Length: 187
Image (cartoon, rainbow, N blue to C red; front, side):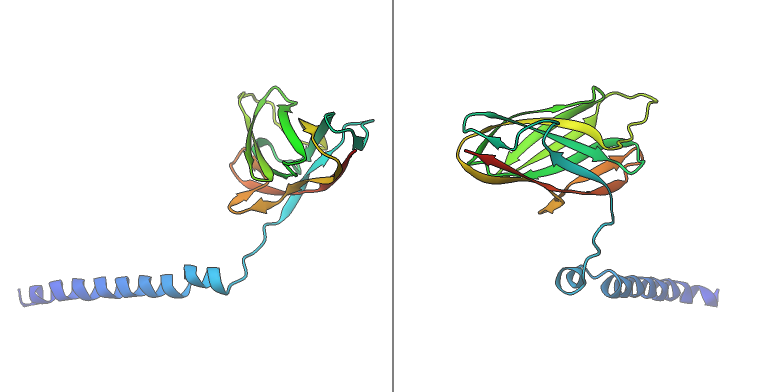
């Protein structure tokens, strides 16, 4: 019965050791302030691609008021894609966005305009055993109307703020593709 006096103290000491140890671990190993101020963040590895381009036989010079058709093609590097996000930058004072059409009936596209960019979120809506692996595949048709003369760049950007251009595979893993720009002239 003499040993029972030490159990509460032993439990308290063990609790303090675990508490202090986990606190030191979080401070030295996972210090969020260190990640913001000094540590270089690791850039994600790029695989596959998402490219904005003109449809086959399309012209590169348009008149103001004319419809500009663009296409996004992609390669998912062998991954089965369940969704993807595209950050598209363009001069909203020079072009009116008309609509985005997804090419595959398995997907649905949602567009969100913000400042001089747009986010396209594409989600698979049909569950099938068929895999959706993109290999230089046409994915989305975009329609704009040119408003004023000049040379302009439409660009798929890898990231802006907390948003990223990415594929999401069937295991919900992120795949960050290479991206490009496209120059358009409006007369």
